Image (cartoon, rainbow, N blue to C red; front, side, top):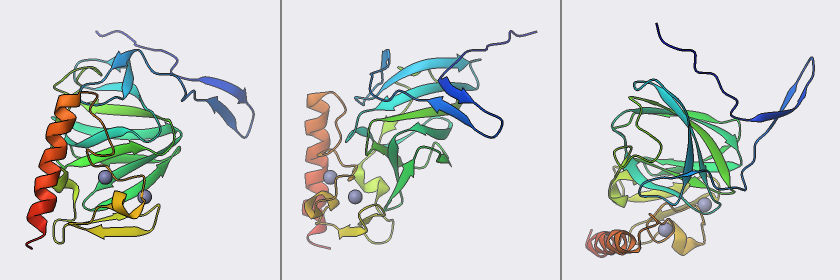
Length: 202
Ligand SMILES: [Zn+2]
Ligand SMILES: [Zn+2]
């Protein structure tokens, strides 16, 4: 038989009959550096197949468009985050939960400092390079129109225009989000420049 794996991932400020107050600290970096992102994480529980980690991204940063080897269930527990999928940037404040198939390209950002509980199956360690694979920016655009819409700013841009040209700070492109690796950032920006140049002829 397996073991019971029990731990505290947050502290509470109050437990009343009708409400519980949780305290989520979003200001401090967590202990593990995540791969291909400046986000940090903390391993919580894993049995090798199913696992959950706490992940934190600072305001204005996050995860560039990517896929996963497994499926993820993300529970935003602190701050205000974004999830980008199929040409739309959705606002996801604390209290939001979303599930997305690992094979579907998506990006995750922080409007403020954000903490997210990430449940994954199959589970890869929070600092594992196998946890996600970056994909081209193109993969999160609307499949029909090379368009990106920000639901928070109520703004739309169609290539060659980008949302960051319109003053939207939630654009999940390599000019806005860093992998933490300067060389890789440059390469991804170059790929995006080619995509923008290509789109001028559409
Ligand atoms: Zn925006
Ligand atoms: Zn951008």
